[in-house]
Every structure is written in C-alpha cells, then in structure tokens.
Length: 102
Image (cartoon, rainbow, N blue to C red; front, side, top):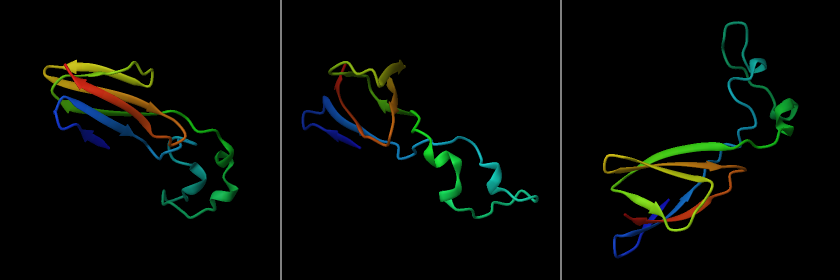
C-alpha cells in the first residue's frame, strides 16, 4: 500500500506478503499418480508445524526515491530514473517505511 504526501516528495509504504512460506514447491503427497492435485487435510501435513520463512517482494517505482531512515529489511537500487525496491517480510507482518524523492 502506498500513500503519497501532498507535496509529492514523500511516500509512506506498507508491504506485506501473506505467504508464511511454511514449505516451498509442491507437496508430493497432494498429487496422485496422474499428476492431478488431490484434497488432503492441512491437519495431517508435517509442514504445518514449520516456522515461517522470510519472503522477498520486489517492485519498481517511477523516479528516484531513498529511505528516510535506514531499514535492514528494505534494499533500494536504481535502474535509470526508476527505483527498484526489494523487501523482506516474515510471519505476514506488514513492513512500514518512508521514502523521499532524491
């Protein structure tokens, strides 16, 4: 979610990914011999006890922006006149940060 200040030179951002990343890929026990997905109860999956893993989200903003305060969960790079932002979230907790125009 993005909120632009009225001056057009500051942004408030909130990034969240609801994927807890309890497992990656396809659970082989959910696929039958024909490769079709079958219904299985989440309550008998071993991964339901796994800890959440960090999730990377990448997006691009037009113009050049910089963090107003340092944040280890946000990485900013520039590609021409665009800002590429990479965030790391975990446990589906929103990551809040502010940007100012360069």
